[in-house]
Image (cartoon, rainbow, N blue to C red):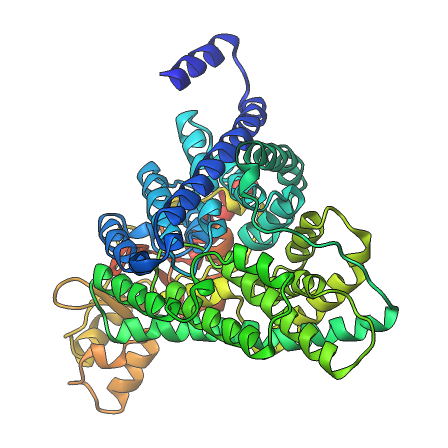
Length: 562
């Protein structure tokens, strides 16, 4: 009702879309702040009334897993952390995020995180912020270009609100969500991220993540310790990613109904919590406690290992929640462990355990997620711009980022997307960002039945326009591509009775209808075939059309003539 009146008012005063976009960015920042505050409060409320009560409530992850598994059955888009989903919606669907996904994401993530799974609220906050941006874009009928702007800024605002860090929200949007720099978006995102963080802090300031200790660098020589901290954290961050991938592969090989899967993981978490209850949930309270507690190496190392395993299980099982809070826990305890080791080995004054924990968080974040600038600004904002932390933080984060990149190619987000088959290339392309594959793809195309023989296809090759074709099975499902040259070679070798399905190349790149031509041209150029199949993004067995280099060049010529 209210939005309808606003739209009518805007029509009367006639406001251009670019001017409207600025107004909506302000509204977006305010709305994301409110949604993020309600989300955090919901998690806090559920946690206080479940596993934090102790006793039999320690088995609340089992119930949370069952309930969220049912929600995922209703809306599968709410599984996982949500960052990869936002990137896919931006790349393939013009930023169109269904409102029901945002609604169910709020509920599912609040239940999973609040009931004690080793997950965090920050990843889901990205998806919630992006969902709010998509809702505004659709409500006010913005172009695909400006809707994507709102979704991108909404995602960054979600991080800004979750961490109370507006600058980190901007850099996160550039490093993780967009993967490129746009001065237009950066300038506008300043407004939204500041508003989102301010509103969130005003509404839920009492629910701050953890207490930040005073940071001091006692000696320049201590930088050697911080460099070692970065080296120590890098392999742990890579192990974290690889364990998560291993869990995802396990559930692929041993599929279970989502309710049973999450309930089983919840049971493992509950069993571990009988001995290490500190490893449940986000772990923020535990971080604060151990930064100020002189515990033994055995306890610190045990909590680090248990949290690493429970987090990999939680994420790898596709529970609804984010990776960032557990990553902070792992980074903090890595820092505390290194501090403890140096304190025992070298009896010289060094900074506090809290100082190493804070730097460890930034180093782990940079190493696991490969967003070093975001990691740096995030910790800098959390420490209230304490200049003493600059050198240690930059050094440890840089070392961790560099060494982890050497050890493993993918960030945590990318690794999960690779395992799900949804990794998005980082191409960019000016005006070609605005033209989609569906605008120029061929919906009338030639396909070859998989059960045709080489002889049958060879007889008609000269009548076909291309040198490669999609192959379909008896049910019309896409199974791969076949090239004319492979058909001819087989025929010359006397294999005329061989079935075409035996010559199919299965791993050819494919396109999606909502994919911009900037991505399509790169895939076409790298492909051994002269056409690429256009597949349904939700069902890769369903082919919707094909796109050739000739079709692409024809469209480019049309653009250049205008």
